[in-house]
Image (cartoon, rainbow, N blue to C red; front, side):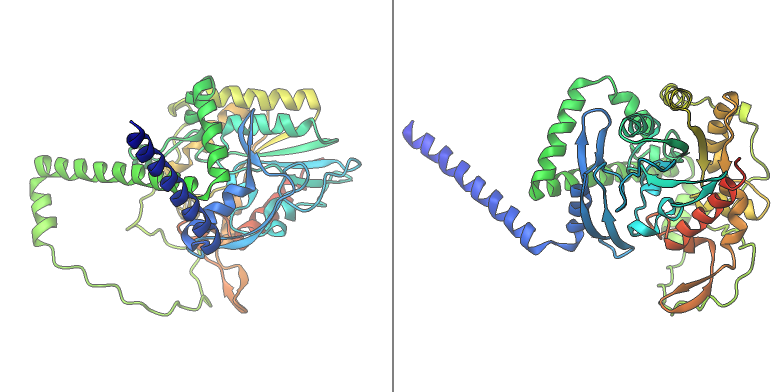
Length: 416
């Protein structure tokens, strides 16, 4: 018995030493592939009401693991992105939303919300505050706003940025098990066991680099298994129901020529509007009637109700904002067509119309995305649509944030 206990103790002690050793190794070496996730993790803190918020008084330089972007990320004493504190004497313009609003992709002063600071609405100069936190859905917006409104004075204008991922998800991603934020919140909102487990894993992975790496590996393996499973069943379906196509594509098509790397062309001339890349997606002639679209999910409607009720209680004006952040929407719109990925905005607008709340849609400003002069690496170029978004990431570039800020200044300038 003593021999068995000694063996167990030896194994346990060895495991502890290995764990500590790996933890120290990761902290010292800071592997590029993991350090991005580590820095982002440490920017966040657990919140008992809405799960995740931003750590107060934090300052980190974030560099994307694939070098897609980098920037300074700072929060103030309220856990709001930016270096400025809330001025009790200034009327406030609040930006409410997810990672697009928070500003993944740029430094503090380059976010579109920061660029709106000092804007004059009516005859008042407003201070802008960025309430955005990544991974929030409609419920997160409502809870975040309720929390911050208890800590600041003079909220006058609230811009709530409706994201495509709030309650809608492309079918190809849904098949991989990726659900919109509002569906996930509906599953977990009244589940105390899930909330307890979430808090435990959140705090544990925040403390330990090793545990965070293990969690990331687990999540990645789940996603890869879903993708593999989906690809298998798609191929199986083709074998049984489209055997001629399967045989042709699998055994008779010529070998694809390897891609040849070429120097990126100088963007000194562009054709506007940019032609639709038909090899990537197709457009339809016109948008569907909003009455033919599914109704908003219950949790989404209840969250919008909370936002609307807050505006009545606190006396601020609520402005739902729609930024076309899916390039399919933009290409189609600029060529007089429509892409179904924009259906989410029609659904949300229909709700706000019932409350007599005017929505702000920046789609009409998308022609400015083509042919605008901008500087990149000390070179003057003419912009194309994809210059406004980080490739493979989808967040706004510096140019994209400037475009949003400029468009919003025009819209907000119309307010009395």
